[in-house]
Length: 461
Image 1 (spheres, helix red, strand yellow):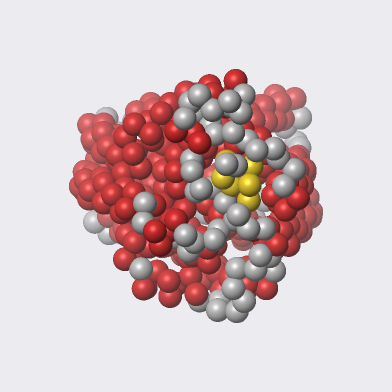
Image 2 (image 1 turned 60 degrees about the vertical axis):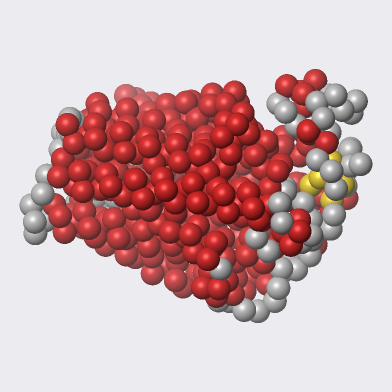
């Protein structure tokens, strides 16, 4: 089916579709997906600063143990997720995932209200691990849906714009958390902040669930003009059984293996940066409320930078540079940041580096990385992708956390030495980005990839 976006004079284009370089009918799909992503990330970013603060409750030296616990949780949950995906169509298993998450949040609300959070090391550990698991699963599920709905050529145009919804949600979530933390600190210091934040997060995640249901209903009923769905994807089963199908697909596919390596290097560098952040902040004598407020401010400014880039630059950069070079921007930013921290390992440099690095990841690397999955078989979009996004990602986390603990513990290395050792990783990471871009381009233009029925959104002829 032809891609009408190549013809800028298409009469069915409305002014917004022309401005945003979209094909006929795509704008509404982008809006609905962006709303869904808005509620999802706003709900997560309400509690993200809580997770970061609870990670310091037991001391930085034991933080790598939480990464190990998170990885073990991924090992247990991945086969269960694969069974759920195989047993129900997407319009059923996606709401089930959100119901489970909301029930878990209710349990934590009860625990925090009656037993406390920061006062209990066990409670803090449980919440830290749970949020780390929940974030990866729901985000992976969202982007699996997007990779299932849109083709590779469309992903370059729409994924950045869809990301605007998530980034805006992250800004709102961070702002809400920072505002609540500041208000409680100044006016009602005796109130536990987590007891206020969790219900707010639950409400936004419920909105995300309803948005996901409506998005799938639009696909199923084809209520959006000028769009043709090539198969009823919300109703189609992926493949029953085979809880380890995702892992076996990675073993058989060199392309999926290289995506796994890319994410592993990303996760490794992210964890090193994260531990450097926690190390520096841990040395600053501020209260838990101040730390929550600081983490929220970093999140907010990161997402402001991200949304500006997504609206005005992401689609144009991906179209101009292609997937490979767009993926390669984040390794370059990471390398520059590591060199800066090597020279000046202070909080101000760290904050600027974190904002720039995370902004380039969310605005550029993330949409480009998700477009890599638009050219794989439908089952791999859910099972293999989920395994990569959760187990491989957290495996990189554990590797980075254990390495940091060993270097700064038994070897007594300083921050400058750690980032100097990590800098060459960014070079390998950049080379891998270029290879993946070329491979994705080849697969997207192959007859095999283009003939797979995936239920993607395409402009009508």
